[in-house]
Length: 450
Image (cartoon, rainbow, N blue to C red; front, side, top):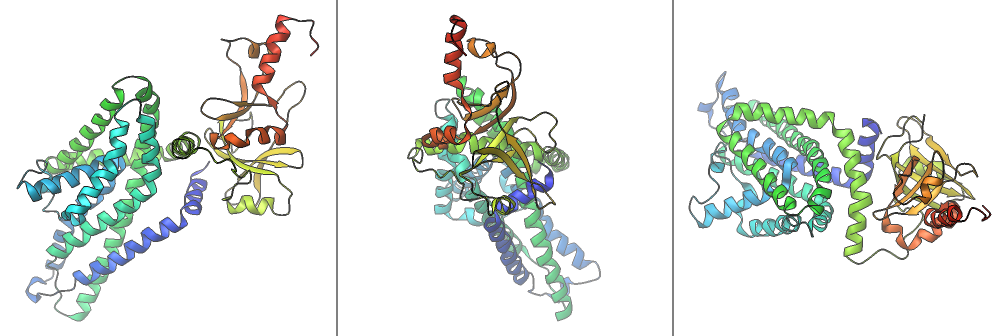
């Protein structure tokens, strides 16, 4: 999957979300425009505009962009720290976290409301507590994943409230004439919009990098006692360290944060594909299993298909179109990568997988079929359903501790639990568990017919 395909997929799947966020950015930019137009003529001179304008943003730009950066590392801890600090400052004098109030005299915006702080503590705290214990770590990850899109909108609103409160309360940019006021305010609105967009970009880049690290840690946190608690604590320590570094060592903080953003940009494709694979194969299935069970009438033609896939299938008689993910590529097939999403199609007895191709109307199409010499297997594995073929002798299938050499390997979600038998019938693939039992009997009694 190329970067263009990733961005196209993000846009197609999140059109309303992106439109909503950009609309909020524009609205708050206009609000910012209005707050920057009050005037004191004595403040304006040849260099005073730049100095005052820069000073206003100097008090707001760093903390606001840092919200995206810190939120990308771990949004839950950032919201909990900010909420707890605000409540501490409100009800305990200066009982907030040491140094956090020194962020350029930064206003905390919506955090100044007690009820919002309590809500944020509960919203972000519950999955964090679940993630801290090995037995509930996977449940916490599932709940947190289901919250992510809402969390992104929350962060946009919080950052905008901070921008409006901070700049609005501190603004001393005043124009001597209406033309100068219009120009300066227009620039202010544009810069505000740019700052908000940059904050969102930084948030998503860094978020996917640390989400990839979280995915790597999930098996360890689930299987090894106390590691989940230590990992949650480590994320708190990391966020706290970066906040203190931003306050007391700003130059070093800028260098480190820029380095992490660059690394996040380079690893974005790998991180995005891995996170989407993990969310769709593991987390969504687990969430459905825990909260209500699998859908017995799960449609075998996915209701939401990419527009190119819909156009490709238009006029065809298909019985099944479901998302599948690649764990091992077909040899010598370009455009296929590990964790890449394809769509498995059953059409009048033929089975193939397709994927939209960026810049082209047609889709990449790869047929799936088995032969007597090289069967295509389908299997109900513990975390997912898998489809694969093997190379070498089939004798490895019959042996308990022998690794089966899989040549091509795709998987699909356990959400299709109640439709698995239908999928087996539609594909015509060999049911692996039954064939394995047959081979065990065959090698135990070679006289059996094959």
